[in-house]
Image 1 (cartoon, rainbow, N blue to C red):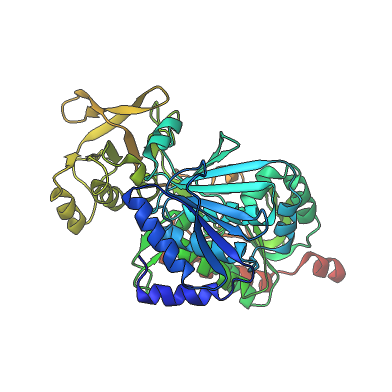
Image 2 (image 1 turned 180 degrees about the vertical axis):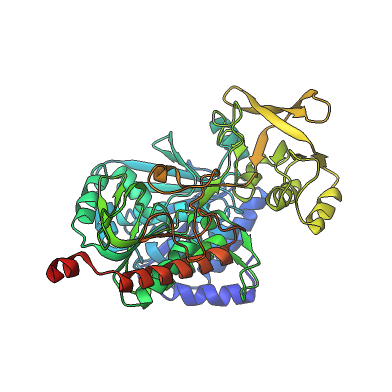
Length: 528
């Protein structure tokens, strides 16, 4: 299954396996079991520290395999063939079960080891999901570090009956001790925080003890990352507080318009951004949701940002780069059936709708690209565009119209998502030309209608546009002196990664200029 180059790379990685590892396969007579056995045999042949055996009598999913550290209770299990985006998860599992140390912080590692209780995790993933590896890898690591934690990663496309029975309609979907526990991308820190009931309190205590920053960046996407780098390069104390480092870029599949990078994927770019920020003296505070901005009372004073966990950060200048999120339709049934047929990531959740009928809402580039991708997986796609014409690039529209299992509806206003027995069974829409109402029977609705800025927490404290965007001038200045903004949360047009990076850099340079022109509070006190 692995080509020569991949085998050579994997052999190099497996040289880091320190403890004997046993691959335990549980197979049946199917084609997928034969594929899995071939993969395991190839891995077995690449390292003297790895052995392979069959356990035909095990009462577990088939095909599946365990990766166990010989003579211990340490191990993880994959149900399916972890290729595609999950191949990295497989490699990391082999290394970590084999004793290779994790790159997680010592603080988080100790937190995991101290978790008390019995935790049996199951994660449903799809091989095309770029968010799933974060969850799979986090839970695998936790099961290596704490023997009270067990984890099985399950390819939902391979275990369709199980997916139907549990009504899994979005990935990653995580079950804990047999009960639904979480859906969507989660970092290691986020998972641990949910299990450690005192984590918010402890984190708030740490944050409240921090000295004021000269520049505090709120948001860790492209704008926030570039702002932090440019500020830190000036030699001034810089902090970055982000609800999720990487922001929406982490949910983006293919990126082909980042200048000098012909192609990359969201998670890879996020990882590169984070590593670049870490090259400088930047205090990165992840999983921190800002709830209130309290502007400085006087010239040269300190701004305050209050966080959801009770912590509070102070700074001489602030850069707001909170980004945006997928816009919702705002129709009956959308929220009720979210992750039960209503989805926002076709790459992640598309494989769960194999052979079924779905709709895509939105005729821009994102909507048309989603429809094209889904057409290769599902049985039928109906694209519904509110306007009289689709807004996507001509080349995309031409490709879409060439597909036989796609229907395009323009001047269509979606009015309701309908469902039965807890999951989507169709949608209603109105023909805006005739006023006639129609119903489409289907199993999935993928919403692709643009973005909404993450600025609700700023209302009343800073000037926003009618669309909720932070109003900025050509120097990234907001209505509050010493507070700057950049990226998709602002009025700057064209929401693109490369533009956000440039705007973040501009905001940091403007903040630095502000700082050198305004004295710090203690300097003013001394002058008095």
